[in-house]
Length: 240
Image (cartoon, rainbow, N blue to C red; front, side, top):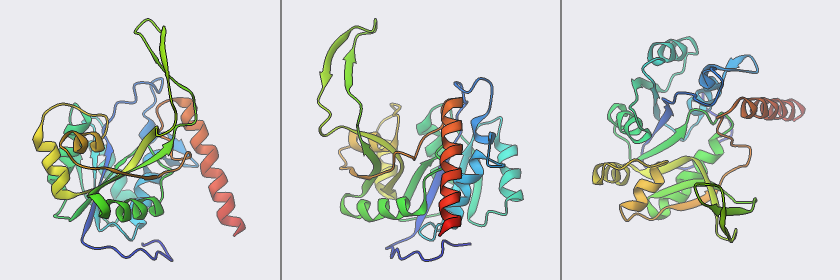
């Protein structure tokens, strides 16, 4: 099923990797990916968005060893048409993305998205693809609103950073596939996101406007906030 009314005109094939191989260490024993949100597991909201996204031809779900079977069954039960593989992730984020790349069919562009960000939508993917066409790489981001301070390991403030020009980076992130693979092969150091790896390899990453609602669930409080946002989104849809 495709998003109705999408007007995105793409150039080249597009694949996506949903990174869902984390360990939910700050969730008080709850696996955030399968935590219920409006009656469905959190990860289902993410996967359904990508399955309906006209801009994406196919996608891979990367899961932890504990969740591969459960994730595969979930994909089958939800009848997700565009998932081509559920594969085992690695010890580090970069290892999980690399595993996803091995299972993804040939594509000109690759979209990377955190499975624990259930509020991203197809418009963000399309926006990312449009901006990535300029440099080969693009990442969703929002301007930093809080005051940012640099501190020592003991918590003593060393200085305050100017907020101008500072952005909090999210996913989706979009890359020319050959550029992404080159970055992964260039070094073995870990990175918090794939944009950092492309930067280290000399690539230029274009930031595009994300959304403050595009929260990555890491704590039980985040889960409650995301559920409230999902309910608000559903209410707006009904009123249209």
